[in-house]
Length: 193
View 1 (cartoon, rainbow, N blue to C red):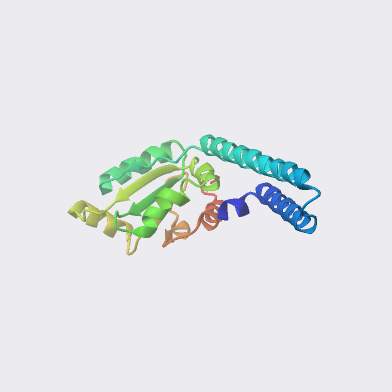
View 2: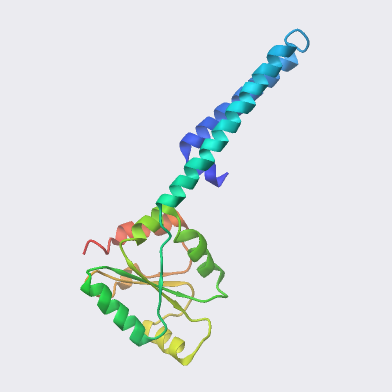
């Protein structure tokens, strides 16, 4: 159902198909014998239209998914790695998003599998240098990185603007759905600075 609410045209056509099916069934119940052939033709047409609609919808969604590339994150393992990546991004005038994550963190996994690849979010993230610090191993380097960045919970998303300056007002700790995260990125507009 979530798929239908994201695409109003698909939802409208689905409702029309359902209404047509209901009208046809009502007509069959009201006139059971004399129009037997007409009922079969009507049902065949409705089933055919629904099949064509579902097929074209699936093809449309596949095409949309192929148009939006999945964001690729660069692994960061230490403070030195982070500083190097930040300097490189600043030289290219790109804002930075650092995802501090752990394998055991369910919301972190949801960000990776659902939120970042969402079409509206992925399009916005294409303007960022994307970094990922997976601190699952809890090594001394991981601990030093978390302490340097003042990470106290997971997931934590940290931002730097296109000049390489930290943007603490943009920090996200915890989970946001795709719409809220997209709106957050739009409000911060770090790529414009």
